Image 1 (cartoon, rainbow, N blue to C red):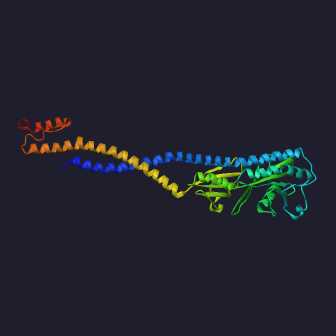
Image 2 (tube, rainbow, N blue to C red; image 1 turned 90 degrees about the vertical axis):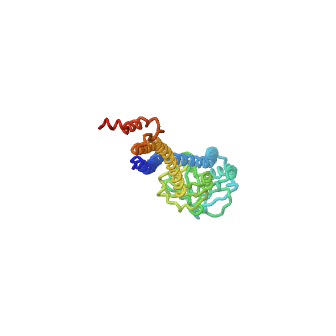
Length: 356
């Protein structure tokens, strides 16, 4: 019975078990150490997506502020006319307001601004309309329309609220949430410290969000307002209904926009994210296990070559000597030769006689 052989087989089993445990522990440690890197990467993606959306919104704000500058200049240097509005459509929120008309300075301003409003409406593909609403509730736009729609009512309501305070150059966002949500920006027109009205631009915010979404089709993008209501949402590069997502549970990865009171949320598909992380986990586990397996195999083979095989020869050598074979095993490694010589000395007859 070779005790070294028994221990060798036990060592093989324990080494395999220890290899699996150490590989698993190393993989878990690596997972948590790289977790901060993955979170940082997600935050970087969110920041870049929000910046892209800001860049898409910025031309609309610039154009609206350009029209505001022209309107302010027209009020500051009015060119009076008695012919009223030369073109465009005037609408009112109530029948009483419908009997009113713009005062002469406002009519003069709109006549001067008319061509600029028409040009601005054609300059960006996402502009749906540009209009002016007076502080009395009169609505004017160059695009032909003969009825009051939901967005007009929303703008009238927002601008009529006493709680809504607009700074001189601050844009206000108006949203009508529906199957096809409508979005508009307005900037106040102020004369001598008194608000005369506001310029309004309805634009396709959904199309701007899709530009961001199509650059990352495997991600879901959600646009929320300042009270966590979902305004727009996209999934896998396509626009989806806003009610699909619950804005109250999207605070884990939000980036507020600087230009509008909105926040962008980026979500990863659960199944896709799980598969990616699982594949990364298994890849590192297999890599660690393979490296440890190579190291363990080298150690075990060295033990077998340097210890187990010579000891097996030693047992054969002792067995031969005990049966009267004085030669025993002759071909032994240098490291074991002294031990074999000592065994030979113990087996010699004169050594035994001396011992007696």
